Image (cartoon, rainbow, N blue to C red; front, side):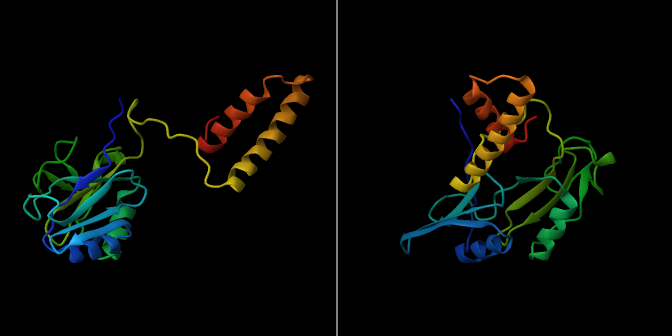
Length: 202
């Protein structure tokens, strides 16, 4: 059974302050529900992330600011650092770890600058929210084998799908011309074309 990590709880002392901080970073607001003065839930999602964060009033007994090592993954850590800084986040300089693998806790083992040859998984930056919850930004440019499950092929609208069907029809017509015969298995051909069209397959 798939078990997808979709929500992480971040302990904060001032809900509105935390919400404004993360919104300023460009995170999407998914929810802000309150059933009274003693219970409130705010959910925000970083751009492109399948996992969201939740914070609020009475949603955790953890001490505000005690979340450490929350991780965001980007394909360009220097560009991500510049973007975070431009939105007011107190972000560190780019660094790599003296051990050459992951990063130590806190600031131990930090070496200034990205990893040698910008090795995937090896370069980081860090920042904290107003409560002191700490985040790391890790650069991943090439995934190790087996680390990513291909995303499902999905179309954003009927018009988007119609356009893909037209491209499939044109490509299939050319395929039949080249083979010199009608293709009785055209539904399978179309299906594979549509998946490849959306996911970038060959």
